[in-house]
Image (tube, rainbow, N blue to C red; front, side, top):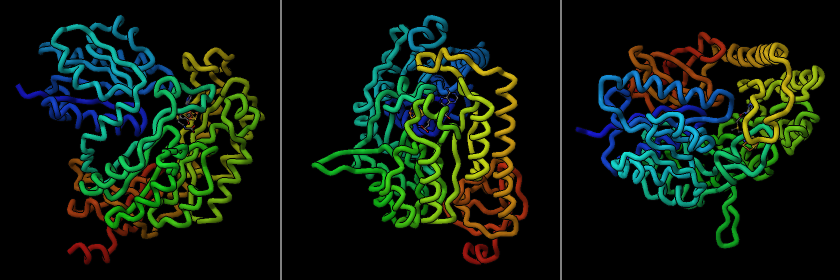
Length: 445
Ligand code: SAM
Ligand code: SF4
């Protein structure tokens, strides 16, 4: 029987990148990717531990898989990612259906673990071995084949915000070799990528030293800029403290760096930022915003917010609301604080649930208002859209504008990979709808 592998991915883009690399790795031991769970004989769950109920989600998913395979041979079941890292032995004890537990820094060992499973013993790999992982990945060509591709350049974090599990699940900060990243980027472009998003838990902390030269994120952006076939460069997620001059200057010098900055602030209150151990203030954040707006007024911001962090008063919350009104973020993530085991904030006194829910609703109302205002401002405008794929069964194409908004329009799939002018005629909070401009039609004909 042919070996087929199915990966279900939760969480951030870094997990998506990892899943893609795992697909390429297991090819070496004869596994082909499948999108059909029932035809797989290896099932990988790539997990996220950032917020509550992460563990329960895993057991729920495994329960679902068990049902699918009730009358069939059991697949090899692998739990990967940050929940695997955090829970390791606990999961193997609680759920015998799981065969392998593998943490994010051990993916270079996945082929051996799968191959050697014949011994029928459950296996766990949760060492922090980032160097070996990337040395291994460097040897496997990253054929993402996508118009918009992800490239992880940095992993882990040394900042230890008091609410966050990342330093525990992804380990210490590590930056990949500049030259190896370039080789991977060249491969992606060769395979059709028109947009590359450089990824890291703190992507702008990227720092790789070789022969007494330090390579920073700005060096990578300046290098990618030279690839004639690459149209767009993005990076995420960045930290306000690492928003250095050289990086901000890229918004001046680069034509391909998109004018959209995802810069998490978490709270608009300095008191709360201090309690969170964020190592930046509201004022420094606003300085960055004003500086970038001066370089290019078209630049728009998005952010992450944690609502009802322990000790957040009504006044602190109102400071966050005021900040949202000032910056007019066009797209953001906001969640109620979720205590994570092992972090400094794990056992702090929580804010009342009802108050938290009300605050979340209020902040989201304000955030969505700006989002919709932004989208409405694009009606009747002709915007550049990078076409990513065809929407299944709809005869429509999907692409994104410079601010990452989804754009949906009718068109031929030969346009995938092109930047087209789309005239927007309808919007909702999350998407823009429009028509191909005539000029494009003539170009494509
Ligand atoms: N490194 C980025 C930074 O410092 O801004 C953020 C990376 S973190 C993986 C992604 C987001 O998850 C954070 O910005 C934060 O808003 C959210 N997050 C992390 N821990 C959380 C928690 N315990 N409760 C709620 N949200 C959390
Ligand atoms: Fe987590 Fe980001 Fe803070 Fe690091 S800087 S601990 S990844 S929130």
